[in-house]
Amino acid sequence: MGLHHWLLVWLKKETKQTMEGINNITKGSSIGAHGVVPDKFRANLHLEAPTVEWRYGKPPTYESANHLFEEGRTKVWPKGSLEETVQNAVKSWQVEINNKTRLQDFNTINPQKFKFFVNGREGLTGEEVVRIGTFNALLKSALPEELHHFKAHEETFESAHNDFKTCFPRGFAWEVIEVYSPPPLITYKFRHWGYFEGPYKAHSPTTELVQLFGMGTLKVDSSMKVEEAHFYFDPAELFGSLLKGNKIAASFVSGCPFSDAQK
Figure: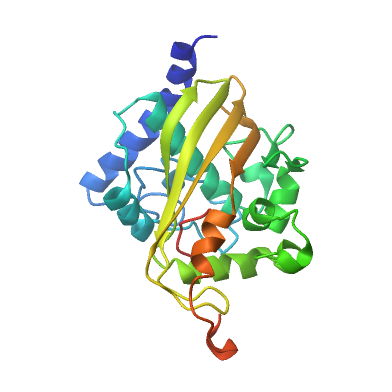
């Protein structure tokens, strides 16, 4: 199937849901089982079923992170373009992988086939990623343990989330820089950024801009459900900035570079 077909499938769903959200905003109403105000970058968020099990008991909100995204993004993609479509689809996937606890509630992936790969390592199933968290999956290191900046085997979903939520209180925004190939195998370059304004473990904040660049691929089926997600990036870009802060007393140390939501 050609690019035109794939875009029509994806955009028909995204446009319908986004317009429903915009129409309800203009009417001054909030819709959704949890009274969630529509999010223009995550069209599904306010339309989730009341049976969805959320990790923190309710859908996440992205008001602060959306502000950071809009003021700091380097690309403003045309409405309906492949780049905008991929960007918003990945944001919706991030909502689910970081905030839902059951694969049966996911709308963005094919649960039977989904695998998660980082820097060429062995793939993880959806159940494994939900259990350990994307932070631990993404930041696992092949270095000797004494050189680990982040010890994934010692972290839980919650501990990693809290640490990164604390150091990036305004969120860690995400944008598509370029899309190199269309569905069914989407290849894209991305940028993450935020301001180091809270402590990271024993390191005090520097207030500096922290940026992380990488590449990703998404293998999708004919319904635009993700079957494989691959990410390639250098974690040292992140920790090189976070470890610059002066050491602080443990009593002041209290979260996710790959999730910019507020609980």
